[in-house]
Image: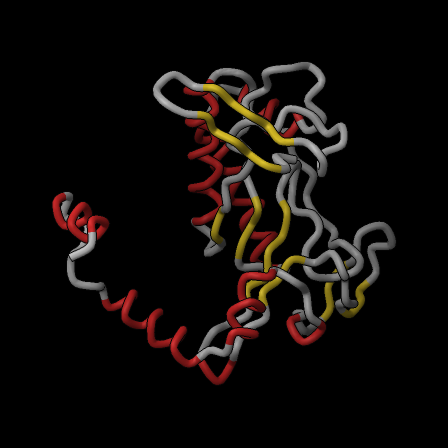
Length: 222
């Protein structure tokens, strides 16, 4: 028995695999290396676009979905029963998504303003609106809310964050997640810590010292 296996057993973490794990292992055994890379690459492909018409932002006209090179989707593998997963961004409402022109969406309060309400039920209701619109735009995952604390006035995306109090941030963040997920959309929390500015966002690394033993490094935190 390896040292790792012994350690896992001592903590009760090496129990028999669950049915979900067995199913995942079965899928992986049938996938090629290229398919495995494709499933984690998050690269948009034309065949993953949603069908039907939607009301486009700006013009407000009905149109078909056009390919967007910056869309975020994972194309499914039908013969393995793996569905396509589309992601859309959060913020003051939904934005981005799989189509080249963003949809008409409901503009809401910034996360900072929502937190300042000190009213989690109201924030949860706002999360329901965001979830409804993400679902109606054929997206299974909403990238948000963001929970990074505002620790500097120079934070380029501070309006996305719920202030500077960690307890309040957790309360309103959880409320928004409940609202979003009540509509059948997965909320993907993001920007937990260290995302303090946008200057050269692709060229800097946040190093956060914390009490205990170690350093938390967040490469390309932006």
